[in-house]
Amino acid sequence: MTFTSIRRPVINTPLPGPKAAELLARDRVRLSTSYMRPYPFVPDFGEGVWLTDVDGNTMLDFMAGIAVSTTGYNHPHVVAAITEQAQRFMHVCLTDYPQEVTTCLAERLIAHVARPGEPWRAFFGNSGAEAVEAAVKLARNHTGRSHIISTLGSFHGRTYGAITLTGSKTKYKRGFGPLLPNVSHIPYPNPFRPPLGSTPETCADAVLSYLEDTLFQTVIPADEVAAIIVEPLQGEGGYIVPPADFLPKLRALCDRHGILLIYDEVQAGMGRSGKFLSYQHFFEGGDVQPDIITMAKGLASGMPISCMLARESVMTWPVGSHGSTFGGNPVAAAAALATLDLLEGHVRHPGCGESLMHNAANVGDFVLGELRAMQHEFGFLGDVRGKGLFIGLEFVGTNGRADGALRDRASMAMFQRGLLNLDCGESTIRISPPLILTRNEAGVGLELMREALSSL
Ligand SMILES: Cc1ncc(COP(=O)(O)O)c(C=O)c1O
Image (cartoon, rainbow, N blue to C red; front, side, top):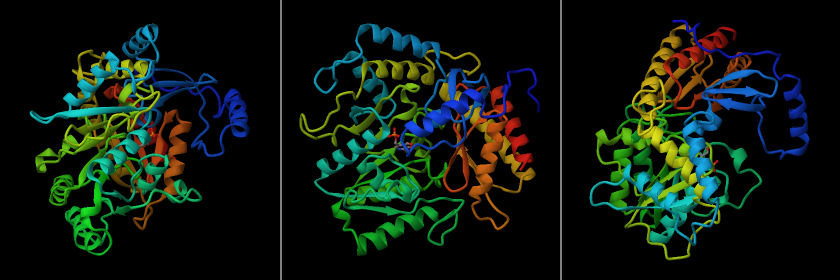
């Protein structure tokens, strides 16, 4: 299939161009040494799924600012909502004063989660890490227990609590200790690389029996565990889809021991997987309803806001015990409401069917199918996995081992052809475009990927 009639990237200069090179040199000496620069891209302006750099090179965006720009760049409905709210007031402080825009946002988010007779409440922050901190504080405060269990490969953010929970790379922790006490990690059930000597079919059982029969018997008393936190689809760790029985069995384990279940939906949530929250893919296997949910990233199309939702029966912390000066900022909340309009289909985006959530499911299925076909062409594509527009492409060497160096070359080859992409895990490229991506635009991206992979 070729997509010659529609827009394609325009590369005017060898990358980086002269202006980008100059800005990168200034960035290198004045910005924090902790910032990464996976490839030399310096944005100037965006439009839909396209980003133009300071030298006038236009790229197709398959990474959305790390799964954030849900509605693409400068969506007119979102820009109008931001402008309108900015003209009313930009800040008063939600911790002390209610504001209608944030109350509406809480109601609309809760409507995606609550079942009849099961009230929920919302706490707002500014970032994913802040939502995770809130979740951990609430879980400890509510249960009176201290231990938290997380998973290997997970990413939960960079504040002290969040990096302690994170299990993906030691670079996030080296030299920063001591971290939070009473946090343990269990393997994530990755069907492509099943842990603990298991198989793709048995990896969920293997992980949960390790927790129940080993950790709870030898290291951590189950009745001292406040919560288990898990990404229903694992993001930074490699865009991994667990087997269908994992979340139902995890929910049942938590119920047996009075442990709260926290889903970190910061990366996979907000419609990206084709459902509003990614855990909603797993109800067929049994009850998977969590006690606490964290969201951020794509919630407001790039405006900084995060939300922790919790069952009302769990949100028992006292007045004044937790808050945030900027959390739930009204301009960001207005952007989130406008993003929800598009995700839910109250406002239609041309070419994207009834809603952006449906579009993510449809276009995601198309991309997954095409990439799986490409696996026959390129033996080094060890695994293609995902749901909706949350897709991972894992690179392997001839021995089947993760090949991070090959992945890095592939990523750069895609960039040089005008396709913005991002790595994750040991050897995976994540595909996380804006959810307004059409099938034709996806086709252009796939062509660029094929060209890049052929060049390796
Ligand atoms: C699953 C998950 N949780 C939490 C975070 C932290 O979010 P933030 O960078 O906004 O603090 C991230 C960021 O990548 C994430 O992917």
